[in-house]
Image 1 (cartoon, rainbow, N blue to C red):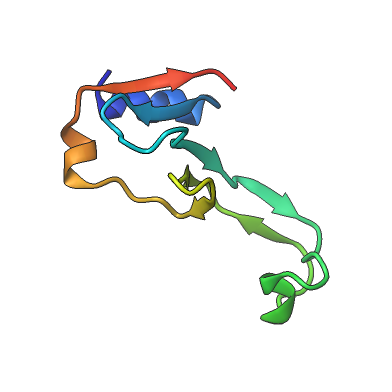
Image 2: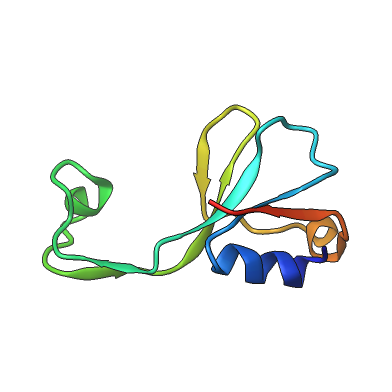
Length: 90
């Protein structure tokens, strides 16, 4: 599928990834899009002095080749024009 189709799939809750990615187990998910009643003690939000209710806006996160989640993933030009996107329901 193309990136537009992959974006619609991830917005619906699927994991998306490219067939051509070399890193095993890499995928992208939609994260955020919810309201938090208060920052978790010890979190970076709490350390920044954010108090009370706040919203974490929707964004894309990547599970990278090292197995770590990378918040705020942004597709490359190659990713945007690729036709080898796949989706797996979560």
